[in-house]
Length: 320
Image (cartoon, rainbow, N blue to C red):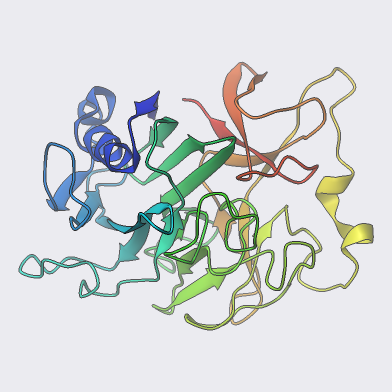
């Protein structure tokens, strides 16, 4: 739908930029896809103690998509993190996110207290945020995916994925607790399933080398994975033989290639659950963060997975 880029002076200003864009961007307002702020200060720089709850209207104005935001900050620990969660609704009389109905686990954008270049892309269904922290790129996908099943059987496919499941993780960490939503680590992403429960998604579950597969269980237990970064399928054991993204380069005419990011499940829903809207795996060959690529007359901007720049570590955001 629409996007913007700019510079936030620090983590609190980044939160204000997100709020103001979702609520007041002229393109979103003109299409009746701007989000409603149902909790939190409507203007000015937030306080560390502030909490926000946004309600997205979907594409038709009839949906109610709830995404919350709060902070986890420590000056001695040098972490200044934005925590996002999804809820199933809103209790207007309840001033905290933790007690909102059906609240899911928090996923944290690991930020710092210095200027950050940011990118925000939003529709009425979901928003994507990326910010450059030092030489890495923290990110967020918050809102609905595009499910393969009809709406009648999957009413609320709400996905919340940032870069960490740990509220106290520092932005410069290279552990599995600091990985992007496209190829997540421990407890960094979660989704609301048709059974009404939240489930984690992770591609790395033990360390930053060994990948865990087929690990799906109800929050707060074990998760599953995001394809194609974790593309061995639902079974198998050797990622070096079966990792699709290791072996895909550019096309013969020199074009980059894209693959949909697809949350996968093993039980009780087996297979691909849907497509993450407007974000993709992208070829790593001759690529780098903030590269603008054009495929079929459509522009995309490339980002890396936090501080990582290996062959599996790039994803692309559609700029429309």
